[in-house]
Image 1 (tube, rainbow, N blue to C red):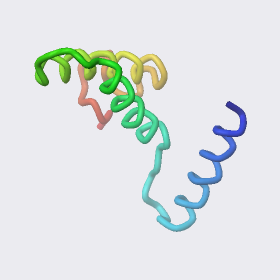
Image 2 (image 1 turned 45 degrees about the vertical axis):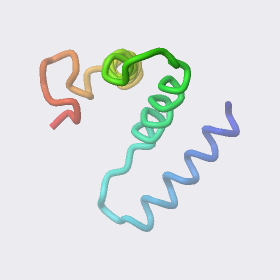
Image 3 (image 1 turned 135 degrees about the vertical axis):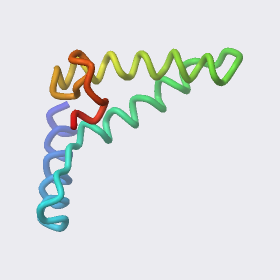
Image 4 (image 1 turned 180 degrees about the horizontal axis):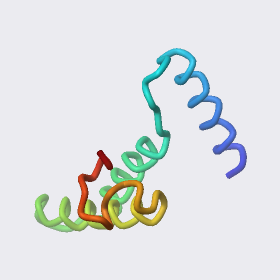
Length: 81
């Protein structure tokens, strides 16, 4: 896990230096990858039902990791603006 965190730090540092002032949060990439991994775990039926279940799980995990900065607990937008 430390190796993955170190690699993500290096990727973030490289992107920060190449993108300048554009804020970059690697947790969004982790959330998207996690979303699709969870999506593959659920192989049952309807796509809409699967999407709602996976989106709820991903939002709960993201809110737990990021905390209220995502704006999920306070009723703000998902992006925290």
